[in-house]
Image (cartoon, rainbow over the protein chains, first blue to last red):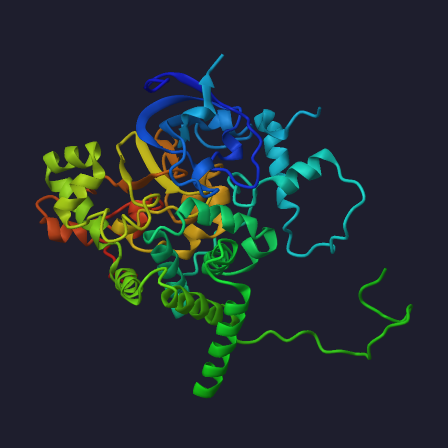
Amino acid sequence: MSRFKIGDRVTVRDIPPLFHTRTQGYTRGRTGTVVALRPEWVIPEDEAWGRYEGRREPFYIVRFNQRDLWPDYGGAALDTLETEFSERWLEPAS
Amino acid sequence: MATRATSSSSTYAALMECVRSHAPASHAVANLPLTISQTRAEALLHVVHDVGGQPDGPIDKTLHKPAHWEKSTHCTAECLAWRGHWVSEERRRRENDLGETLYFGTPYYARWLLAATKMLLDKGLVTPDELLAKMEEIRAREEIAA
Amino acid sequence: MSSTTHDDHAHPHPHPHAPIEEKGEAAEFAILEAAIRELSIAKGLFSAEDHRRFMEWYDKVGPTGGARMVARAWVDPAFKQRLLADGVTACKEIGVDWLQPTGSGTPSDYTYLITCENTPKVHNVIVCTLCSCYPRPLLGLSPAWYERPTYRRRVVRWPRQVLAEFGTIIPPDVEVRVHDSNQKTRYIVLPMRPAGTEGWSEEKLATIVTRDTMIGVALPSADWTVSSTPTHG
């Protein structure tokens, strides 16, 4: 079962990267909105280290306002960025 | 414990400047520093492929016609995945493991090639002796052909 | 210490020495590539036939599948709805099967497709900051600039400047939406059908859908095809 639903505000957990990651540094600690639910897949943290049949989790596409990602964002206020996270990376926005 | 630089968007932007300072056009030779600042340690441990948001110059739109070895590397990497010897996420992790000099300093498919080679060695699918002997054989063959 | 003169210290090698000369393409990677391929085949890790099939695939893929997909979506609203709902399934209708021959080989690369529809209010652009994920079954192999770090570094933070370098100016009242492809999903941009193409056939429409318009760094135009040559008129 997916923990989050479309429209939920979520914050990306700031787990230190250790040699490899699929969660971009620029998203860590940032808050956005879930815009799409993706099927369960093996998490990249397992696949990257050879556990091909590793833990499976739901994935989510999260939309961020660019101004919440970059303090000096120079484009329009309505500009956004979307990227994807496995469930372990997200927590409800406080 | 020091706060990590990802904790706010402004400190993250500063970290990106520091990460970029590791790869200037030319830089001093590294010499096993005796101490290191937290900021520099974080910048060095920042995963090499995570480049989004780093300052850079104009985009070089030069196109590249792949050499035979580049094309063949792509296909070998895919065949190794197709037959269950690795997956693409493992390949990407192994590209990062090559380190910054090789990651940024070689053509795109050289990263795939070096990652595939080390995977074969790490898993014992090929031994270093076999690889060296095969490379010698190919070198000799190519010289005769030339 | 000065690096330009050697007068101030004892030096073990004679002067002056010529700078290291770099010429020609490295043979090293070609030798290593042949070595691991031949060893892999000899040990049965994969077959020569497997490799040949992928080499054929590599030569065959290009942006024509994507162009067909966009043109079909422009003329067939029901196809467009199927495409937006389930990209991988809808692609079979235009002869692109994401699950063959490479699907079993690289499930991480070829699993899901999301089509990002441009509208008068939203302009989409795709990137993969962490590597170079790209919708290869529809667009072929990515252009070098898509793989190299400069585009990956900048487009997520300065998208409008990057688009401007490709000659694409997006009005400030249109949202620029960057899609950073970082997991299993692949993305492609469905551009808006340009003015002046009314009544065109699907085949003719496909000729103006270029690779860059499906990455999102360019916009299609009725007077521009992949084989056009710029003229001054």
